[in-house]
Length: 131
Length: 405
Image (tube, rainbow over all chains, first blue to last red; front, top):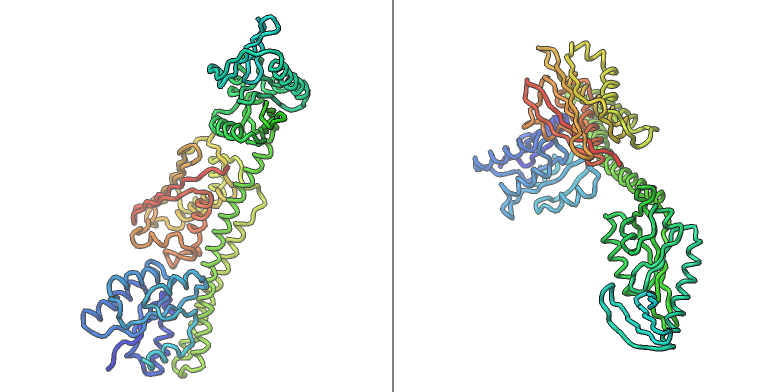
């Protein structure tokens, strides 16, 4: 079944475009969606829920974003969509090297991993293939 | 009848052979009254002789000194004490003592006295004592004089002027707090810079990996994105150098500045830009408004805010600028800069207004550092900023600048 397995949330439009392009090369476009802000990410998830479509297996989330940052996104996500055992996993992808950011991020129950930027070029494709 | 009163004991002598000894709990309460002869009298005389000897010694000390009874009643001040405090002998020396101690230190002194009297041990306290009509910090030492039975007979007190040291320590403490604030700021700033440096670098790394795999048709597209990432890097580095330049200052940490003079200096620096914009400028600052601040910071704060007003002026009409300042409270100056420029959508952009490298307008010439710098400088010693703004109407920025100690 085709569904959006990976949602990438990052305020850097360059990064979004580059990832889209690389996914396209692998022919995996159908499995990938992206949002350039945390608010847009939340509304994409809400749309999928309303249409009773499967939510992504992975959310790749940037922390440092203007307006709503990654932590605020996770607070909202927890309140709105997390019921204690939802299968969606959040993977933090950040250029922050602060330990306290890492500790704070990993304290959310749905955060599965904490990665520093840049991700290897085939990372998203591998996630899609695995899930 | 001869009357002698030493410490808390009063002798009343009748016919030189009879004596009433009254021990006083305090000034008015007698706790013992006995009729006694020779031996007791001898003891009391010896105590008072010792006391007199001590008083003779401390009378020639170059520092202020005094003696007090075991119960803490002051019975002698040395010559230096009267000269130093500019007072004269009074019957009630205790009253005289409290007169020259700063009222703010009365309760601390009283507590201290009660504690050491109870323990009978030597100790020290810092209190302000009046000298030349000014209260100066002194180290007051109290030492008990004990008899063979280890019972406190009286107390000897001395006061040493430590005002300069105390002031120096206070200055150091405030400098220390300032350094901690700078440290805290740098930590946040470095983090913001690191993030802004890393983002384009990691993009370039990813780009180089992607270029290896990219089909020919996409390669040119990818290549064209290199320059935007390099520009971003360059902008961040230029901004970083700018901030470092501002931080570098050989001037003293803080001193009295005349706000009106500083505003006039900044206005003169920006004269050309203000003229180009045909600016109507009104300055309402009292000439005598002087306060303790870091002058280079004040210049940077004001020039950044004025530069913003010029940069974001409304192109449809000429710029109006009003600069007001008043003393807000004992240690705060309220400085307001109001313009009739483009205004800011505070609901949308309010939150990121002060973030470093965040430009509200992507076409702006600046680097998105101005307000960040203003905020850090105002907040570093407890000041704050308020912003009121309406799109197309203008912006009013109110600074509450805290004076430096």
